[in-house]
Image 1 (cartoon, rainbow, N blue to C red):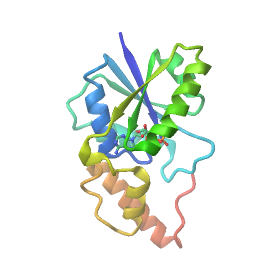
Image 2 (image 1 turned 180 degrees about the vertical axis):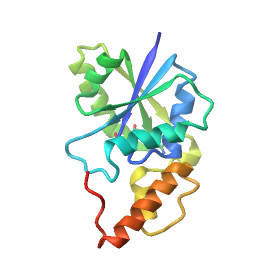
Image 3 (image 1 turned 30 degrees about the vertical axis):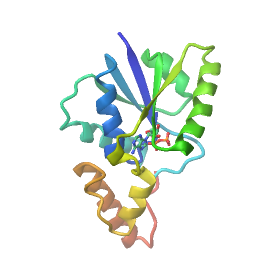
Length: 173
Ligand code: ADP
């Protein structure tokens, strides 16, 4: 069985991520969405919320070869744990590519050449979609309904409400 691991912050998951997921599930027997934590990053959603929003966002999609896991260690160790021989990453532009090339070479070296990274380019409509921008738009009450699923839109709205009631603070997790 050919499994691919799709790691990312998913803070939160966007329609861009879902487009990559939908297309990649046709190439592999199994796709493992790996909601990862990076020590250098601050997340607005807890890891449990990020996992839940991925699961809720997948609920309306007709795909059954996807599983969602949480991981807070090296990505190549997640590949070993979940039996994936390939890492999947999405590319929107040249700066993604520059970063991803280094990441893929490091992972290949760390795994003694056993793990390769597959890059998929974003569909044109999703090319400018990033979790960072969506978070910013949501914080200023902008329209995000064409960039995220309903569960994510609702979760972001709840967060904005919490933040405006608490002097701009976000929940601690
Ligand atoms: P990370 O913190 O690891 O970059 P993200 O959740 O931001 O996590 O992204 C996970 C993966 O999805 C990355 O490979 C990223 O380039 C890709 N990605 C993010 N947004 C899009 C999009 N709109 N279209 C295609 N790929 C995307």
